[in-house]
Length: 610
Image (cartoon, rainbow, N blue to C red; front, top):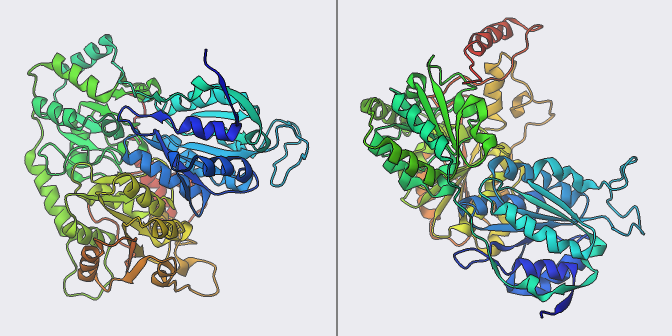
């Protein structure tokens, strides 16, 4: 008969987390990012110190960006491992809500452990407590409820016996995977309880591969056989499933061209003859041509986000049908698709077996070669001009010196769209957070990628706007000697949204510093700023200098920041499609009326149901 062990609830939590293992024999929760305050320092802080390297603790600079680093780590690990983040109550907790939403949208696991109010309510209201005048059970942490996959409030020590296994079950479930919030009442963290010794026995968490329903597989096979011009849309689910090889084999065997979403980009090397780039708003010309002609769209691990579908105008063949292969019925049944609920790898194998030797080969191989020539043209270095480089030319510079292990990453602004349409990614060489497109993810995310894959050459693209929002984890990366390269493009404002504002018929207003209500136009010295945190920082004088500085950054033990001034006006110069951003119906000048006319013409093409 097993005995008990007396521990505080905080000690019990970290002890239990330290023995939750992957099939590869690693901790599933690799460690804990922590900023301590009165809501977690005496309880969790003491427990984390006591457990030491059995569950390492890392200090960050901001609760949101610590969580961003953890999320990027989990994405790089293909959801096979994750990290935890703890904060105090109040602002420390609510700082993590944005990151929780980011993880939720991207279906990525992260364990958030904010401190909470006193369960015994004796010091009520405690410092930083949010009081609901009508509900005494509410705290600031209830803000997490809509943006996590599982929420629990630990108000008794024995709650750990049920909430911790539930939390890990969610984080390791391929269909329900996402962020978990365990709001930990600060007095309960310090309370002792006699826990069963068996609770702390090591446990291996297996991430299951869900078999698709045979009837759904048969229906998909029948639909594909009946098609004339099928196209595959490869999403992030292909990568999380580890189904890159199966996707390649399936496409090759059946002669079906592939386009990739932001999350799915690099599932197939850009050089593969069936890779036609991306579809939709930030789509390649050849990819969107395929999408427009396709009579069957086979989505694999994609949510069919509006950028992928051109707000549901890009797949405009009159007779087209949708097949959606996804782990969750919620995603698989969107927009009237024929659903196949199952793991991407297993499902491709079963559908492929059903198709036998059926092959299509309807695509034009020359179209993708012509597109590659277009990319080379718009990303080429400027010739004989003193003009500022475009974002496309910056991408070209990085591309020319990229190596086989380079990972290009970004999240918001101009660069995500430009990178999707222009970056030529080797398999596994792309990391984009474009589900939530969260400004400020970039620097922390680059650190998370490098922590997960130290052998990779991580290059972070970030605009001056996103950098200004969140950059402090540079100091953390310096302290921990986590090297990566940041290409900081300075166009003196929010150039991406400024272009959208103009496209929608608006006046240039409040996006670029020159169009904002400011007394002094800022001249921000990003080199000095990054250098003050200990990073290696310098400014590139031109595109050739940028290339040289990227090469020189390799081999350093700390982050390298390379600043380059860019032109805010041009877009990618290639590809693209309409995006549904509502334009005012009345009350504006002629430019607004023209924009509304264009909007109405495109909106009339939308097809939101199969």
